[in-house]
Amino acid sequence: MQQVTQKSSSTPPSPLSFVLFSHQRSEVLRSPRSRRAHRAHPQEFHLTDTQIGLLGSAFIWIYALIGLPLGRIADSASRKKLLAVAILIWSSLTAVRSLRRQLHNAALHPA
Image 1: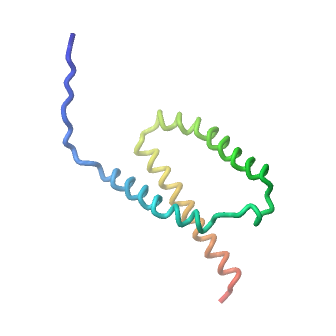
Image 2: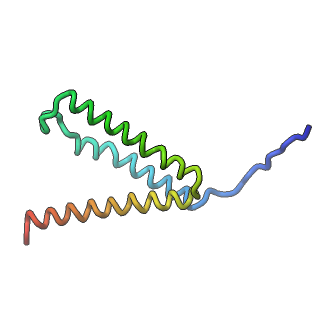
Image 3: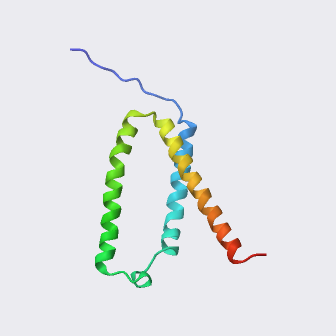
């Protein structure tokens, strides 16, 4: 019977690790404030308890259904490319949101 020995790896972390760690930290630090700032009250939208429950269920079902094809892509695609595309999409949508808000404010308050 052969014994398998593993070599200890002393390679430093890649720059991608630093980028991912920084992105995750910024999301964790930003998240609680944005949740408090954008918390919607059911009375504000005149929602019943049933409608609130259906919204939560819809989120869970959509999340689960989208997770199936994305899980297959994650298993078969290059991790670096997948992360690069995900961060590109996230950054693009964040930029579009910012531009939309600026255009909305400019339309409401013309100079």
